[in-house]
Image (cartoon, rainbow, N blue to C red; front, side, top):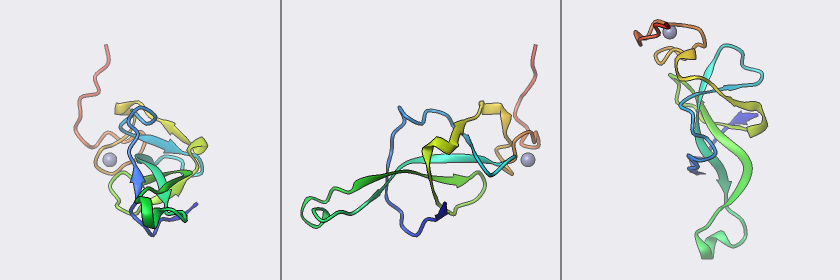
Length: 101
Ligand SMILES: [Zn+2]
């Protein structure tokens, strides 16, 4: 995994329907998935179309650095399992209603 230097990706709400995800190797941190990472190939200069790399572009909740991550390491979270403010899994500081019957 590496910090992503570019800003291109392809949205795929069908493949990534959850609001937040956990990423292997980053316990306790909630992530958002933007979509599939793309990069230019030899035809892009003509076609304007970039190829998917197979990785997905993610950011930590509350941060803005983009990471390129293998989707096999990305797992959906239940919406209330993480804190929308600080991005920690299990934190409840964001004031959302988590009352359970
Ligand atoms: Zn919090």
